[in-house]
Length: 257
Ligand SMILES: Nc1ncnc2c1ncn2[C@@H]1O[C@H](COP(=O)(O)OP(=O)(O)OP(=O)(O)O)[C@@H](O)[C@H]1O
Image 1 (tube, rainbow, N blue to C red):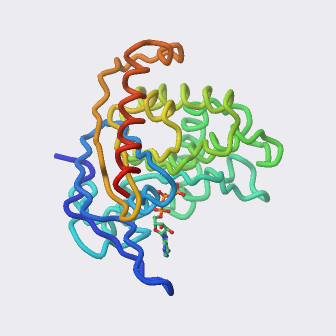
Image 2: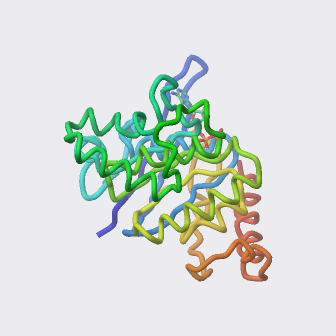
């Protein structure tokens, strides 16, 4: 069964300047354990699609299923963790305190919270930093903490909206490697929005190329790259060919916009 299934999904925002077709006829099927990147120019509906999966937006047409449920039921069943572009950590709470917050809201016991916090901090390699405040950590570490927070309740799906967009290239490389390792260790299904072709190619098993006005999918590319991906894979002909294919897809979408 698909973890995420979209059939004919449309979403139109009614604005003062008229309707904005953020998503038009989106069909997509994501299997368990896939790493799917959404790439495309600004305004092509990447965020809107991710937010629709997370029941933060409601499609105006079509069918969207998350773990076989409608997105609202999936939200109530805590089917996914969501990582936003900015880490969004509370400055008055320690890192452990920030990760604990959703667990507190969900009523986990203190012992269970401590166990989960330790586990996810280890996964994102922040062990030892639980007592620090967000402002005492680098941007990359803060973003890792926000990933840990999204992982804390152990949902099978992780939705990430340009989580590394604001970070410099070197930190981003490191976090890409760490995310790939985490994905392979946990087997989660990941939906990942990015503007970066190398990032999409490096991380994904499937690359969804989107185009604006109306927001739609123009290409779905299944990656032929092996799952074992040292950063140097980016220099290989296979990687370069795949990046080229993504670029072609982006150009194609641009052409008929
Ligand atoms: N709440 C809203 N009200 C009206 N229009 C909206 C709203 N949210 C998004 N849009 C419009 O819908 C379209 C798709 O936006 P969306 O944010 O999904 O694009 P995106 O591909 O994620 O862009 P970016 O890469 O800039 O984040 C854009 O034209 C945007 O202006």
